[in-house]
Every structure is written in C-alpha cells, then in structure tokens.
View 1 (cartoon, each protein chain N blue to C red):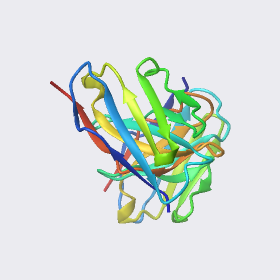
View 2 (cartoon, each protein chain N blue to C red):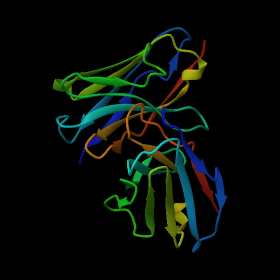
View 3 (cartoon, each protein chain N blue to C red):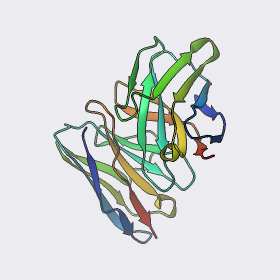
View 4 (cartoon, chains in turn red, brown):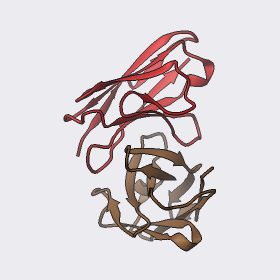
Length: 106
Length: 118
C-alpha cells in the first residue's frame, strides 16, 4: 500500500495568515493527489484535485503543488471558514489511501 | 444535483453483519463508481471499496474477506455489507461518488454513525 504522511498533524494560525500543509507519499504517485477539507461533523469536501487543480467553487486562496512524492496545500489569507481538518488522498493504484489529516486551528 | 443519503442501523452486535444502503437522487448512477469510506471516531478516512453499475467491484485488501458492495440500479441504491464486525468497525460510514477518470470523490453523503457493541 502507498502510505500518505501529512505534516504537521495540527497547526495554529490566525485569520489572514498564509499556511502550508505538506503530504508525502511513500512512492512516486505522479500528480495523482487530491486534497479534501472536512469540518467538524460534516463529510469531506474536495478542494484540489490532480495535485494543483482547484475544484469548481473553491476560493482561489487555496492552491496545491507538487508531484512525485511531495505535495503541498497552501491557503493564502486564511478566512474563518477555512479552519477545518485537511486530508490528502492518492489514486495511483489500490488501495486508495488518505493521509492522517492536518487540523487547522485558530 | 446529485445527492447521496446513507441509511441503516446505528447499532450492530459484535460478530454480526453491518449493512448500510446509499440512495442516489438527482442524477444517474451511470458512468461513475460508487464507494464507501469510513472514519472511526477522532481518526482519519479509510476507503472500503467501490462498485460500478455493471457490478464490477474493488475492495480494500484490509477488509476484502469481510466486505461486499452491491448495487440495485433500478432503485438507484448501492449497499455495503461488512461481516464479523468488531468494535474496530465502529465508525461514521460515508457513501461517495468516485470519479474514476480523475480519481477523486466528488460527492459525499452526510455520513451515518455505526456503533458495534453488545
């Protein structure tokens, strides 16, 4: 199985800050990497797919980059609604696996 | 727009079979894979498997011997059956639409909590 490791596991920030979350795959996955946002008690929501493509309707302050084994999710100018847990997910083969999550706190 | 809704018992006895159904509304089941993902309390996400309307399935090897996903296209429903459950199977279970072409889960149900306990 491909292991997805996120860092940090939790992150404290303030409104207006720029934050970066990283995701490392245990082997080369090209750009087969997605990012989800999950708010407490809610289902995850797709934010970025194919490592860097913004899902329709997601604010442009979200961006993704990377390829191979190292990926980042950046949020520029944090808004109150961005405080949530973020997960990366690979789709380079099976089983599909997720990172353990990064909790973004105020 | 397409919406998903999970249904099923919230409490299952150890060693029994957990069965959940997801109803797809607002669109067709054609052309997509239909998946189950679970999340134990306070933990991360685990993909359990998916089914294509043709009946083709793919399961997570960690559960493969216990999991079955089936589909009734006439009812716009697909189901999860997980046998021989233990407390480790206690989780929120989400159904989701998997867009195979781009490898992401683009539509999710709200999730349903299932507790395994005697």
